Length: 108
Image 1 (spheres, rainbow, N blue to C red):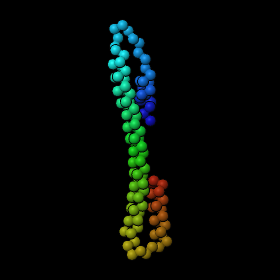
Image 2 (spheres, rainbow, N blue to C red):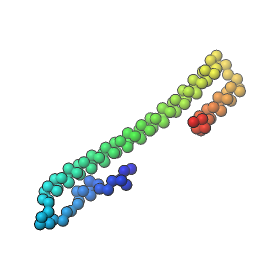
Image 3 (cartoon, rainbow, N blue to C red):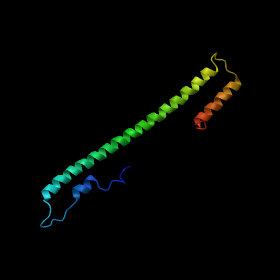
Image 4 (tube, one colour):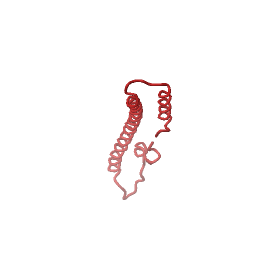
């Protein structure tokens, strides 16, 4: 998901070779620092993976809750409209029409 925005992977950092000059950095210090960077990159990757899974779960839960709300609203409307429980064919057809609108998203 984020791989197109992240340039380096932990493996890229680990395998990076620096040219050593006579007045260059100490290789041990560079290696130590790169080890820290590698751990951070791996942790960022794990966090991104966890958050992506959590987001997917929340989206699924949200969809289920929206469907439940629609179902309960329909049920509540039916109860309000026909408190005595008597329903005629025309009432049933009207209710089916409203359900189709809800199901196919024409009501939103």
